[in-house]
Amino acid sequence: MAKVIMHIDLNAFFASCEVIRDPSLAGLPLLIGHTGRSGIVSTASYEARAYGCHSGQPMFQALRLCPKAKVIPVDYDYYSMMSLSFFSYLKRFTLLVEPASIDEGFADMSEAVKGKEDPESFFRSLQSELKKETGLGCSIGVAPTKWLAKMASDLKKPMGLTILRKKDIPNLLYPLPIESFWGVGKKTSPRLREMGIASIGDFAQALLRGDQNVEKELGKFALTAKEWIQGYGSDRVSPLEEDPKSIGAQETLAKDCQTYEEVELYFSRLAEEISSRCLSAGKEARSLTVSVKTLDFRLHSRAMPFAEPTRSSVLIKEKAKEGFRALMDKLGDPKIRQVGIALTRLVDPQRETVQMSLWNYQDYERKDATKLLIEELNRKMDKPMLKRASQAEKGKKNGNR
DNA sequence: TCTGGGGTCCTAGGACCC
DNA sequence: TCTGGGGTCCTAGGACCC
Image (cartoon, rainbow, N blue to C red; front, side):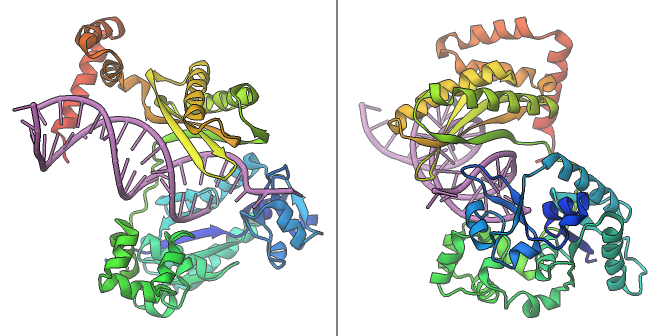
């Protein structure tokens, strides 16, 4: 039985939030974003979009297009609050709500629409009630899979509503330019165009006949895309929050730098920040990745394992410094415009005792490894923890998959 | 005044073990 | 001494999304 998946996307979310806070901004061209040397537009209000402004654009370019636009700095904490009230509104209809980002999400409405004679007016009123209650406008896509729902919600903006059935795919999606295929970005679309694929319909045909060039270009994604366009993608809405796989922060430098001394303050800030976010997430990191962006906008990175899992800002900064030096050495001390640190290979501190020791083992000289491992186990582990952890390991090995 | 910051997933290649 | 393949773990870089 086909599910009823809704994708709901808040229109010009940051700008809407600002208008809600200060209604005198209504109807004005607004640019929400940072203004510094490398500021970009996070969100442009629809009035600003009429001038060609859009998110991701350098702020100075947007201002050239629309000099009278009002620039407002991003207030992420406030938008996060508004986002929460948006998602709790959705939960009135179903608990199967999956946030996809701060301003969009999926909801499994299969139960909610059951027995409704006129689903369209049901979604229409869901939309207008949200607007009435919170001031937030949204576009809604309804379809049997998440990908189709996402594509549907993009079809009409703002305040759009599109119900897309499998049989509507050729009519509604095939005519769209290849660029609007979710998952095909600005690197892949020109390559597809070179192969004569200009529309989603062309793309679908190529995938369905198993075009070798296209498959080679897309790799594993070819199979996924083929399923999506046939209406067979995932329809599982999972309300449970996933564990983060990495926690990182980066910052564009006030001016281009070359030495560690010049960027040390940035590293202090970044280390503090990710350390505290790691604590909030209840995680520790087994590795860290330092990255620098050179003047040609290329990103270079260097992974550095910790001796044992940590979230200490002191250790993070120390390790980042080491990695930075190694990276700059390898690159020949280029000028850089951005630095970043990310914590990776995150673990739950309480449950990782055994793995932690095994990890340490890899860090030691091979010849001493066994001895050190035994010492480590004796020193670090209380017996019950050891028992629990090894049982968990056993369970994992014997478990499914 | 050229182009942010938060992520996820994929790929290719290397190290190491059996 | 040479050859070799499979599997796992890790790294660096890139594509994509909001």
